[in-house]
Length: 376
Ligand SMILES: [Zn+2]
View 1 (cartoon, helix red, strand yellow):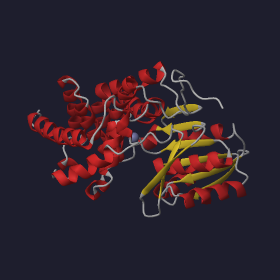
View 2: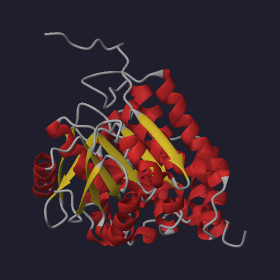
View 3: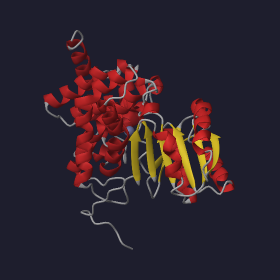
């Protein structure tokens, strides 16, 4: 049996990434590259408008279109339903139009059937469209496990006109998720931890550069993107931030790895009060915790907190509706420090005590800067 050497590098990515206003109307061009039987899974709240639009796009083409409404949860049952539909339609390609859970469902169905998939995200709140992994939930919405697929989506098609119509909070949440990418990449590089591309590959220089660029775009253009999105205006800054949220964040985390930022988010899952918050909102606060845990320089912590405040990401426990009691935070800290958890990609030994201290310290610092910049 062959094994990967510690110095072997690995990089995975979608086959193609397309982003621009009105790109949904060119979907047939991309599906027809794989064949003419097309199964499309669409989020229920968008189903009527998008199915109508796609019917027009596909009429007078050689492609046969079959559209399904997404159940709302990426469960094993939903994956099986789409798999059976795709089999019945002799589907040559499966398309997912909607949020991260829709994409995770078609990724799993496509991987099972070994047929190409196209992800069309309608929100920029997650990097699910680019990665080769699906997060599986129960019918009740409780996360059970992840499935790592052998290949990434064949095409990721982002229509910025659709993204800009989604609530701005989702775009901001995507920035929160993307905010962690570089810092988690750096932690993985310092501890020389394997990425998620295969079994034991190290990160490429390309992946580190993408993670760095992801952070730079947020700092330079994040605020402008948020403000223009609020007015429904597409600018270069907004296009750049959408690319950072979906492509750079996705390529970044998969090719470098997650660390304490995402581990804190997983810990928050045990606090019911946080369930109304988006992934990226919790990851943003987790990123501040990670920087304090790593004892990074003041300017860096300050830059991240200032960025969060400028776009409206949480900087305190209260912002996430978490009571800052010792018992509450130790529930989170114990989960974060659990054996085999993401926090062990940090370049030092992680214990519940130091996690507790960094969460409490992040809360205090977040509150301090919030007060300081209140009137600016
Ligand atoms: Zn994430």
